Length: 233
Image 1 (cartoon, rainbow, N blue to C red):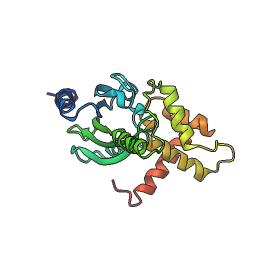
Image 2 (cartoon, rainbow, N blue to C red; image 1 turned 45 degrees about the horizontal axis):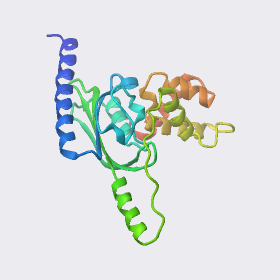
Image 3 (tube, rainbow, N blue to C red; image 1 turned 90 degrees about the vertical axis):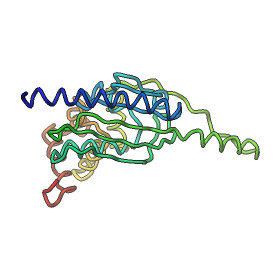
Image 4 (cartoon, helix red, strand yellow; image 1 turned 180 degrees about the vertical axis):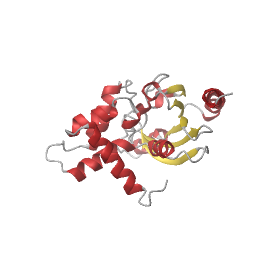
């Protein structure tokens, strides 16, 4: 069997295993923990399966960009895309994120690679900590203090809105007067938010910063060289 035939079959088998794992875990962890299976080969509609999607307001067919804010899982995806020397999964465990409406979450991500070292799937867990905040609100009520506001569930955001939010977050003061080092830093922040994984991300960033798409590629190379000064992965 050719390699071109082996890898899709291998990926399908692993995705099926992860899908059943998600179902099993969702029955064990309860309604306050979201579990998401992503197809990294289709980032615009990456969500293959999701349990308790009310936590971040997502559903099957949603984009990889629509997840929690401050998600370190994108760093794991980027590392996997740059380093094909191993097929071992890459894990980022127990880090703090925020739901789209600002509720605190505790997250973990595993990025899975096929036998060629290419990342193709990720399994993410986001635990909603707002129950702890609710307990504080009860105590605050008993003590006569102001309680915490009720969390809201946001409507799913489209791809244009998601990319605009990432760009705005990387350039909070606007792009007017930004020098090259500031633009490189903005590109680094956009990269950490995953914008360059999805189609059109490079072009959106270039238009926002007033540079060409080739300049964005150059900035990304500079960032990579800074993170790997020895030239090794």
